[in-house]
Length: 109
Length: 115
Image 1 (cartoon, rainbow over the protein chains, first blue to last red):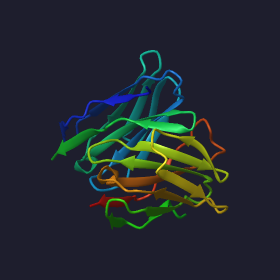
Image 2: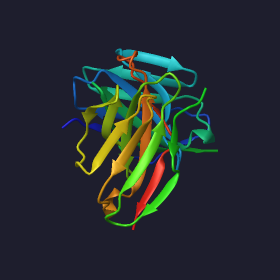
Image 3: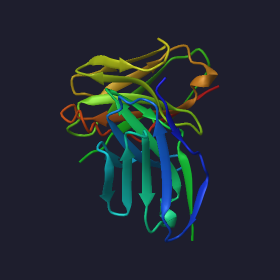
Image 4: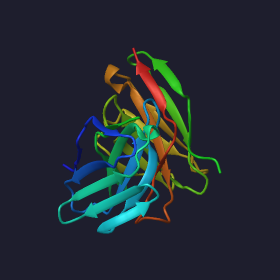
């Protein structure tokens, strides 16, 4: 069974700190990986995706992929209270996305 | 640029009834996927439609069916509703011309409550 695992949290960080969110996946055939942010009662919003080993930066966000370890992470620099949300990791295999259960992040002012 | 739209926003049904949910993809997208998200869980893949055909299906019973129209919009139908079908139903669209990246963008969702 293809699975994506995330630490459900909650993860709390002070404003201005770096938040680190982690994800592992079981299917080595997964081709690309996505991070979504979901506010309570809302739909997921795409933050960024990554498909090559290494780091990918977009503003305050950095995604990291290690295919050998089947590990994906998201770093949020200079965390803001508005970053408080659930972060979903997803793995794309063929035409299907597999989502983790999400990590709840709270940024404390 | 219009994003993904879904209707209705909320829906209340009783057990045994049937429901139809609708989705219009983001401009330029031709592929629609449907997900079910229970409270506290990640979205679970129901199926994906491309070129008016079901291209892939997740682990959902045949009570869940769908359709895609020539304008790429899509419907999700659920028959014989069960209490456990209560969830947020999400539609996501993507462009077939970007198979490696395959970014999916979600609509606002339809909150279905089965009583």
